[in-house]
Length: 117
Image (tube, rainbow, N blue to C red; front, top):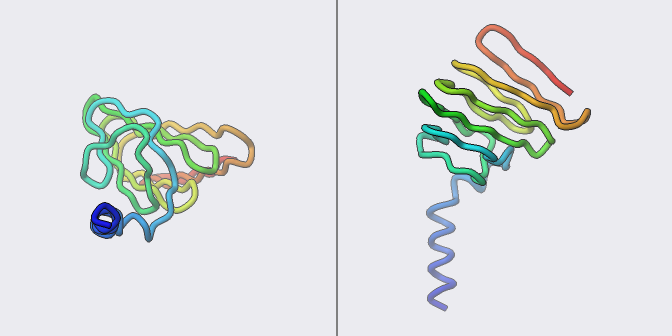
């Protein structure tokens, strides 16, 4: 009984904020200084809608979206993930790849917007 109660406390305290936002992607490659919502980003971490991705000099982060699109935040970039495969880039560079025709990816930047798939 103690183990079960402890599990509920950890779930309620540690994951409550993430439970109300859908998973949009997973980090598939992380190099150097990359952050998710201000905390160090690690490979195989779920990225939820509304999450902020930041990379610093020498860092990059590749995300695979549940729709089948892949996006890489290159070094010194910042942006956030919205629901589905929608990404807003505040500063820096993105590299994008649509893995199949129905993947759908929308990227909004400070000077342009792109929709793929």
